[in-house]
Length: 251
Ligand code: NAD
Image (cartoon, rainbow, N blue to C red; front, side):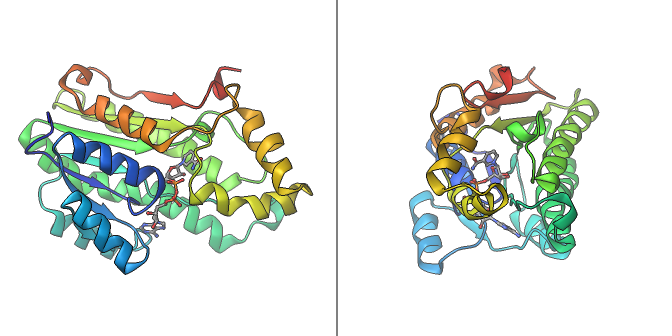
């Protein structure tokens, strides 16, 4: 319970990776603030499970982000995790989708970070953990906005790490390969269409083809890495981009 007394805001934590990170930080004693969309009753159940506060802020709206951060008060651990994907060839990529993907995956973490950093500096301790992706290090076709946003968040993280290097605040990325979550399920139909493949072909020949382990990454594995990054022993780990991708980017 080494995180007792620390407050953690995890964006996009009503589902998938963010929820697993919230559960892992809660298990170590952190007070958790959830964010994201979803069924009201399910969110109420999650809040009860984790004794958590909750913000339904739409992170595409800077005014809503500012209100969420003001309401959150102290944030010792900021996990910028909410993200979205859109799969289409670049010359057919809907411009509003480009703006949304960049807005949620890259611009929202800028806003939450700029608003959380003053308090972290004042307290002399903080952890900023950004869920990037294997797509922060390498690219796949038909994911131009996503690849741009994830390469962008990796660069942003390094900059923040350097600026805060002597303050007790670290900033790191976690870069998962394919994790079986609603985000992955949701892109299967578009990938089938873009590549002319069946569902099984997309899973085996496109997704798992990338991962030498031939296994999807488990959300709880990402939670465990986030917990490590919050430890005192990780105080010198900053500006890093941690792959957890079954060997994908080793090739
Ligand atoms: P998910 O779809 O299960 O969860 C996304 C979360 O973000 C949900 O809580 C959702 O409500 C929230 N969200 C969506 N739009 C929002 C908005 N406008 N404002 C506030 N919240 C919003 O997705 P996931 O797979 O758990 O993805 C989480 C992060 O991990 C993303 O940044 C994603 O790019 C990254 N990632 C996922 C994979 C994967 O294979 N699943 C791989 C690498 C990186």
